[in-house]
Length: 274
Image 1 (cartoon, rainbow, N blue to C red):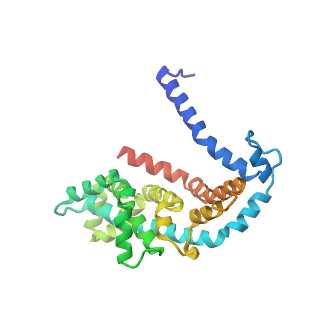
Image 2: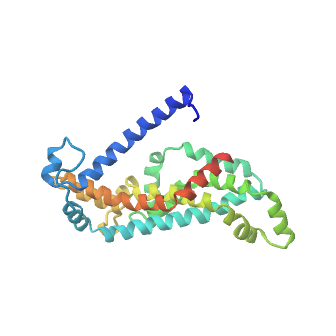
């Protein structure tokens, strides 16, 4: 049996503490979703004494889940599609195509990682108002696609550079053009990275609140975070229903991550190695 060094023990202990601190609020949310209104006000205990599904059922009905779920699915799905299409092409260009100013443009994209998104909220709102897309789903999708640019370009460029150049030379010798080489050779080999970027794009887009709150006024276009806010803004908020709504909101994200976990881990490890 291998003995752990003192440094490893400290690192594992710190990670364990971090895991407990991170999971504790989530555990309370799950617990509250199965409590009735009286028990949630009593507090003091994590495990429900009188577990009930009535809170989830009532919240599901009040939240009008499917109406807002379709809006969230539309915004998230089109955002992920836009990110994968636009930045896979951009990443391939940065990795394989020699054009003037390539290094400058690439590092410009990377530098945008350090720009807080909140700083562009006001100019973005003004621009969307002038373009007549403020308050529409298009006005959400385009900024979300643009906001993912730095990370997506960085990861995809690294993934495409890791592909042996001999494959590109062989495909060129067979008469394939750049688009065909990109589609038939490089894109399949970058699948773990593409899935990783898809997950990293889908999760914050699904949970986005600030821009949607500023942009959307028509309730028929609300996404799930705004529907949850409306549920919580009652005169006397029901904390068990708020926790139930939060659980309903995060379940699709958890299912997505669990389904794609293997590809996600492979994509991250590949990006770190590159």
